[in-house]
Image (cartoon, rainbow, N blue to C red; front, top):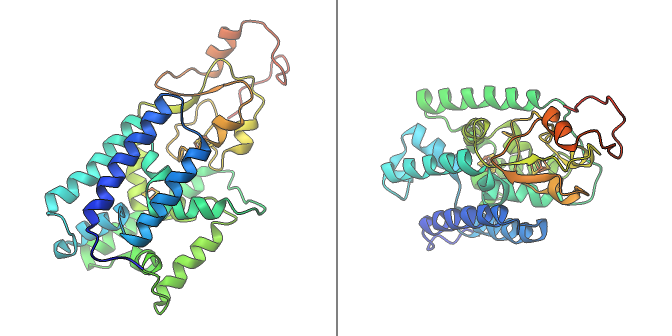
Length: 282
Ligand code: SF4
Ligand code: SF4
């Protein structure tokens, strides 16, 4: 289904524009999950029609030294990867959230109604992905083996049903019905770089002093990233926490307040659902 006559640079241009538009909408408080669905659908279509922007595969190609497979000059391809890492540092993983077709196809599938599985300890997924990514780099650099090929990313978006690897990614897609973004959270090596950038990043969705500790955001977050002290490296900017908050207690901001500062800001005013002396949630 990929239309080879459309140059992949079109997908790259879309990625930069869409990522920046999403950030602007977040900054202006005009983003909503409903608007997000438009980006999810368009980005997924880019994946199937243009096979771009596929930055995890671009990273693999560069590490393997398959320069001929990259449509752009090598330095430009590297710069693109770095640009999105810098954007993640400044504004969070809006690329992952609503622009990368590999992520958006999983996000769309996760919208299907079903009982959802939640991995309560995110250290497990982070550690697994790190180990996978170390193996990915060693195999790609030393043996020119591209692990992502065996996960079927390329064959899936090319609808190459004759390839056994198509079925591998289809299995990942089916798992996405129940588990949030299994590829992103367990396998994506580029996601490792983006998540590292976010740890010390600037703008993030954070709780503010309006928070009443009702914990609705914690229940809504598929990646356990809404605790007061969470670093947000696994936040895909899905907006579930923001939209479910009954008191505008989530804010896309550089300003970090911790649980103690919130308590100081609200003084001794009794807060709904917050018994006196309740400790901060994770
Ligand atoms: S984690 Fe990787 S696959 Fe998932 S959205 Fe981000 S770049 Fe794409
Ligand atoms: S619900 Fe979780 S993953 Fe989604 S935006 Fe909020 S913190 Fe990020």
